[in-house]
Image (tube, rainbow, N blue to C red):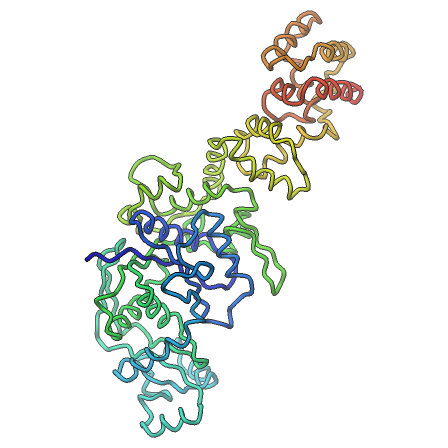
Length: 502
């Protein structure tokens, strides 16, 4: 019987969620939904020294915002809990003990000071085949010495005993056949002195306990694969081992290396899904959400970093991504992150989304600027007028501000050099023609007819009108603006500006 698809996203609660992590979650989610499977969120908090308060809640919030609600998680327990590794602590020691009993692991009693001394003595020191015989561990000590040390509560770690001269091979669903020489892999710690497992032991034990069918994770975990595969074998679970999928890296814009938070800081764009404030330092790291990205656009752009459906299509809804997604179309090569392209995705999503659907998100954006908008009908009309001009949801503030407040200042340099008493007379006359019943087309016709009567070309009067209504040389069609503002407000703005143009 074919294994039921169960995949997991297993972040560590150590800070903000990098867009590479969100993409890993996304590919897990798409695969699960495509195959009617289960998407699990498991929090890997075994390294208590790196645990950050609030990070777990932040991760859950990011997934929620992206529309990737887990089927099972610490917040939504299923039959395979608990979903925090720290709460599974009691289950790991038995596996470490089993590995030791079977000769696949050993106790290591070396103190941090002894290890530091060795690192100073031996350049590029690694604890493994060539050095384990010189260290203080159960391979070099007698059984009696080991028993005495353990009975005396001497701190120890448990290390995997990497075999000599073996090739560990497996099939990666993206990369095909992959092999590792065990002589080049050191004896990683499996159980720490505080009794907590390291990632290596915990991830294997938990994936087996949770019946995970496919492991989607970043390419940076490839070097750990031989350790994990050997643990699946050594613990007698080889037949239950999940399929492996190591995702390509998201690269810096120039393609040189993995994209980091520092790159975002340096180049002026976010690399986190949502704003993250470090509780220890108070430092704020900006996120895509708060910058003004729609979650649909964020998910869309992430999906296209390392995957495509084989066509020229670039815009996909979540449902389309689920329908089209396949592991075979994931690239082996890293994908360069291009922030201008990211904004293009957002612009396209804003443009193609109805004003009604944009309304709730934009009210939140305005509320953050202490602009409270209660007239939804009016706001919907405004959104329709300006959405084609916005790359980010936050752009609506600048693009729409003049619809809610009269210009506080004008781009006088664009008007005054050619401003005349005759032009002032024209606009005074035009203000009297305004009527709430007139459409943008009718307002324009009246404008042109009156211009002819006053011996002006309409073109030389359009810019002053725009600046009267909005303050500068921007915005949608000027007569559309006038209709949206209404006759009374438009008349008032024209009269105020005539005095300012002077």
